[in-house]
Amino acid sequence: MFSHIMVGANDVQESKIFYDAILGSLGHDSGLVDDKGRCFYRTKSGTFAIGKPIDGEPACHGNGTTIGFSAENSATVDAWHSAGIANGGTSCENPPGLRGGTNGTLYIAYLRDPSGNKICALYR
Image 1 (cartoon, rainbow, N blue to C red):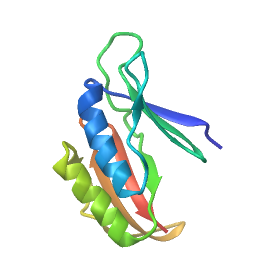
Image 2: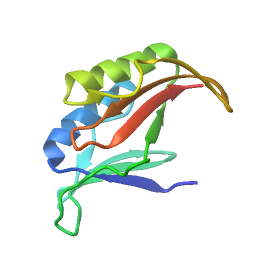
Image 3: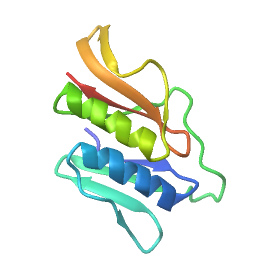
Image 4: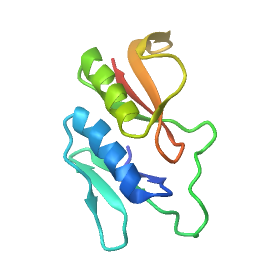
């Protein structure tokens, strides 16, 4: 459905360290920075990117926005969460664990990245 997702970052290098760690825990390669200072993580199914907002204003999180990354198992979700905390992220919502919902039971963890964007890793 999506070709790419881009989130704003006030400090792209700080955010790259964070995203290299959490996406690395999910098996993805380090991000590549282009000549405009944006960082891209490319996969067969799409691209995730970080960059300074082009309007020159500070990056800020979208209220009500969450970007979810797929994980292969609950241990990978835990590793993702730990990597995020160790690299400048902050835990939000409940600790990593099982959550029930309309889509069944999920194992999920939430973080805020260094610029405040809300992200999660989940295993179905």
